[in-house]
Image 1 (cartoon, one colour):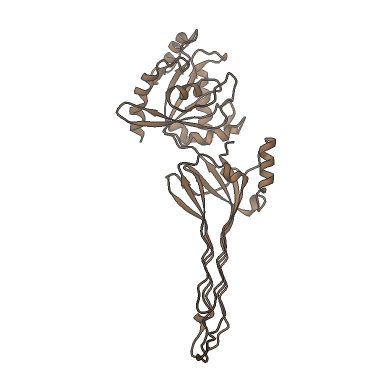
Image 2 (cartoon, rainbow, N blue to C red; image 1 turned 45 degrees about the vertical axis):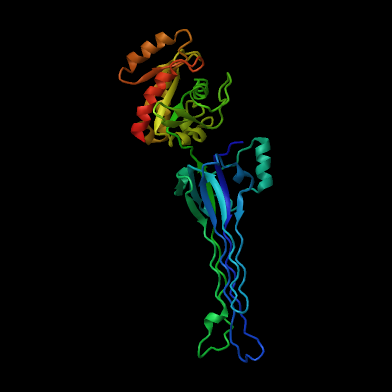
Length: 361
């Protein structure tokens, strides 16, 4: 199962209380206070990990708690500090803080999450337009303290003075931070394949890289982005994402619109894969216009993104005539004809992509 958006509840550990103790030893009368400090509570830390590709681990364990620090002891013994709880998330994860006013304080427990996965139900999540991001984990190894552990309290040894020789005061440990957060994964790739269902995006990615996206003759075969690595001449390479097919109204979340569109924002170059043969009964030029409109309505930044056209299915009847008509309508646009199924035109596509991606890096 692929999970790219999840709500979690995190609670850092509390600090341990300081101790109230007095030295009691033979031949040491009036030993005085010797209560030690409490240990610090563990923090909840997110770490961007290149070996993690989605948020499914958090789907089944959405409540994260770090351990609390130990209490201080006599003889000025410091309580043991709790270890930090490190949660590995994919590179490209954005973290939002959810105010308590935007829904339940606690997400469903693990059993409810498992039940949702089994029945296909999707838990309602707040829209990211209502939230402000607090961190964007875009580099491997990048860490962020989601909830900081509480500081250990001070023992009574710190409260002694010439006027207070038998202090019974101590400082309790501080409370660990807590909150509800939304984690959203936006896959990072150099280029993204954008197109209607059955345009041949998955076939194209499989032909150009070692990725193995699912390919079948029905719409929405690809249900989550698939990343492939494409090698170029000169020992350079680039990552290309197969973005699941878009439909009209995707910017209003029709179908799985927002689930797909959020990943396109991470791609520096957009490759519009068009069924140039019109095998689904659609006009390639109209397909391009509608896809561009959906991206612009979803996020205006996508309208300014660099893009080119991959004219796919050139092995089918009618593709050549449609390509000529398409070029007349878009004379200044770079169009690369290919047949992903027959692996034709892929070398030319690599030649075009290599400088385009290098220029945007």
